[in-house]
Amino acid sequence: MSIVRDVGLAPAGRRKIEWAMNRMRVLSSLVSEMESEKPLAGISVGISLHLEAKTAALAISLERLGARVSITSSNPLSAQDDVAAALSQMIYRVYAWRGETDSEYEENHRRVLADGPHIIVDDGADLSVMAHSMGIAGRVFGATEETTTGVLRFRAMERDRALGFPVIAVNDAKSKHLYDNRFGSGQSVVDGVLRATNVQIGGKRVVVLGYGWVGKGVAERFRGLGARVIVVEVDPFKALEAYMDGYEVMGSMDAAKLGDIFVTCTGNIKVLTDQHFRVMKDGALLANAGHFDVEVDVKALRSMATSEDEVRPNVREFVMPDGRRLYLLGEGRLVNLVAADGHPIEVMDLSFATQLLSVLYLVRNRGRLERHVYTLPDELDEEIARRKLRIEGVGLDSLTEEQKRYLESWR
Image (cartoon, helix red, strand yellow):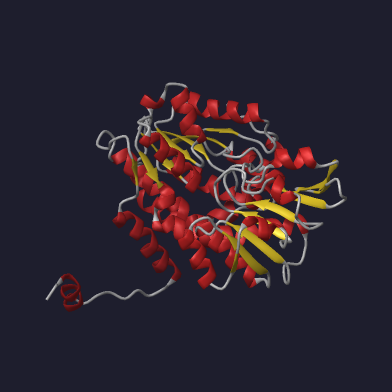
């Protein structure tokens, strides 16, 4: 049976899910075309994603195509209890609630694996890594991975010859990272900071640490609200790109002295540490946009503080020995999902359509894929973009035969 916090919250959660599904037109169009065929009949799918309304729409879509779906949340603070309650009445199994302890988080992942998934839909690779550690990876046909962090873990497993099944790197699809990581993170991270703090953005110095697709989107959206954005990078090409995009670029210690708001976007560990905390201004806000809560060194922050207190929902005040106050948002976890609703619906429509096609690709190619990390075939990736354009009524030009010949010729 499903395990959620309060089934009485289901009506509110159902309304959230309906609101999302009505706006996920790419995903729903794919389901409508294939629903009668039931291409996932007999397939069990285990999901570890941030459990909110858009994720619920994906789980429901998979079941409409014949799958049996079990789901948990990929972050202890990102599950929405009303959505989990509603979803528990709409799919096979739900194991999730907001505020899980570390042991509860692990146990819910074990419950999903105990349901015997043939396909894993992962966000950060925790479910898949657990399947390997439990020795049951051989029962899994394959997995799909939503995030940069998870793809890095899977590629490390492949490098070490530890990967037990094929993986589709959904994050690497153009229909995902070009839109989800940039436009989705850009809007939702700003949304999370605003909901948590209610501060003005215009005129403030915002330090964005990491200028990958997530960092680009975050920097762009904060600048759009009038912030003076500083970018911190370790990659010389990304640093040069940020500089030519018009941002200030400097080292993290120099930026630490200037920033009013800090957002980590790297996927790496200890990006903001005690060295930075010692020189930050009174009132600085610390937020994380990376998958795991390792980018802001919360342990160091806590050990330095003379006191700490929750001053607003999702805002924790740490008082330094010299009286300065630093504010950690969302416990250092993904601020856009802890303090807000995550990426916009229309963005996740593209990402979860990519997830759906990736699951179908793994099922249709069972036994023909090696234990490697793959990208979604270009023709499937492109189909999502073309479908989105058609749905939005956006025209697309095409090459003439003469133009095609010209591009293919060397004469």
